Length: 414
Ligand SMILES: [Zn+2]
Image (tube, rainbow, N blue to C red; front, top):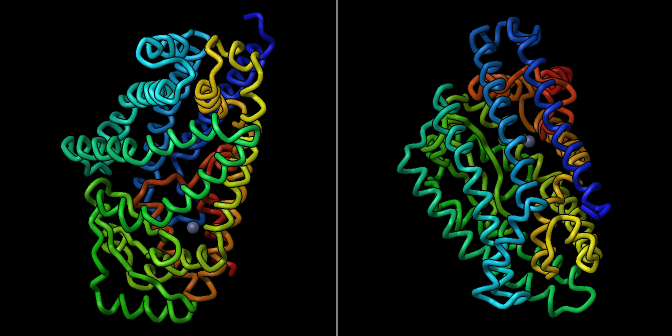
């Protein structure tokens, strides 16, 4: 504990953990306080029982979140100052020479596998406990195991070569390695945007062309009004895993496609589907996908620049309980601890995302009926048991979408 950085790290971990717990407590308290009355603007549209179910669902998820926050803080302490990362590194030294790429790869994969394994019970409880209890879970144990195995295969086939490439660049590319790594990571993420909808998602879900001819015609008229050429309008069998509904837009260039969850198509009428799609088209037409990508690229560049400085500092390693000062070790420590230092920057991303939501709503009202979008949103909030009364501060900090009441009030005056 002779390093000042140890204390800096402990202060960051303590304040981020306290911040997370405080926000979670506020959210639960606020939702519970508003449990017994449907907010005025939703009276008539959402029955009290549905409102109370949303409150109980939010509170149940919040409780699990509190457990996870505490567990993650303990795990991080155990890995760093507790010496677990150093111990794992020493074990791999018996197999591979320290500071070799195989050693670094094995070290990072072991720690990541370990943290995922420790997070598994919480994931299981979320799906088979909470989601099940509130009637949203459609996932079977068999499907869960298949999904997990597929996820591991993808991580090995895609993740490991990427990790090896990054470790190689860190070693071979000279003082500006962080810039080269950034270029590789950004190229990789654009590449993934292209292959995810066409090659990876079909491995997990079935995509069938939208068949309802009346709806297809309606959507095609909308696309023509918006001047958009789609490479496919698909329905995804989201109901295989969950009763939650959604619509999204995936891919770039020739792989771009519009995807509707089957659950959504069943519940919304054609006008409402059109309005939801107009909103999604708004995200595309207003370049939101590109803008958020640019934002995360800038964030990644700053992070890698900082990592470039940290790798040379003995205090960074030793302050985090590690004696083996290798480049892979620096990368691993950075991956583990950076979220504690950047926690209070979280709202920067959500501010951007909420601005985009308002813009996409405004776009939707230009090309479809705003009343339909309001109807669709009310149905989605009701059917997904999303709370209508989030704590304002919790929502401002975390939520990618504006609170329901604010969003709908704006649409009604549009
Ligand atoms: Zn949106």
